Amino acid sequence: EPEVTQTPSHQVTQMGQEVILRCVPISNHLYFYWYRQILGQKVEFLVSFYNNEISEKSEIFDDQFSVERPDGSNFTLKIRSTKLEDSAMYFCASSEVPTGELFFGEGSRLTVL
Amino acid sequence: AQSVTQPDIHITVSEGASLELRCNYSYGATPYLFWYVQSPGQGLQLLLKYFSGDTLVQGIKGFEAEFKRSQSSFNLRKPSVHWSDAAEYFCAVAPPGNKLVFGAGTILRVKS
Image 1 (spheres, rainbow over the protein chains, first blue to last red):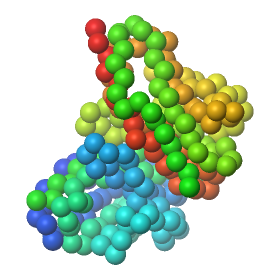
Image 2 (cartoon, chains in turn green, cyan; image 1 turned 90 degrees about the vertical axis):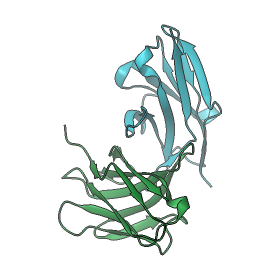
Image 3 (cartoon, rainbow over the protein chains, first blue to last red; image 1 turned 180 degrees about the horizontal axis):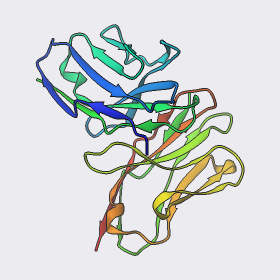
């Protein structure tokens, strides 16, 4: 069964460092998303991406964040200068159609020290 | 603004007992409705979804959910809980053409 894969599964970084989280969405999906879940809190929407551009972003997704689809398979989330409060589990998701069923990866846990 | 409420943060049930997890949403029109499950250290797995039609939907692992328009609810049920069902359950809603919004989650504990 096709699945969304994310790397790394866990990353520890120092505050102020740049981090890139990688995702390989399901191959025939056209809509891509990043969500995050701070420990003990709800899953929050960060950004959606379609046709090589951001279609929607939340207020969390400030100038420190960027997304890119550098090739035909990867979808990346970059945090330019990490802050302590960026520590969270980051989930990538993809879907065939907008607001259809989202398929989530297993998440990348980011710990900022 | 759209919102999703899961009023129960924790629920404990005995193995073999029935389960109902509550979910209410606030939105003018009927959104698409989902239940996801997250086991410790795992990603989010879709249990079931409602887009339209029959208001009682069947999902994986023996779960079902009923959409009640009059109550703006989409409660998740299972007639007999197994120890492996212990996890966190998230209700999520998406107005057509809009992003998925999650509830705060309900942690299910199963006691033997």
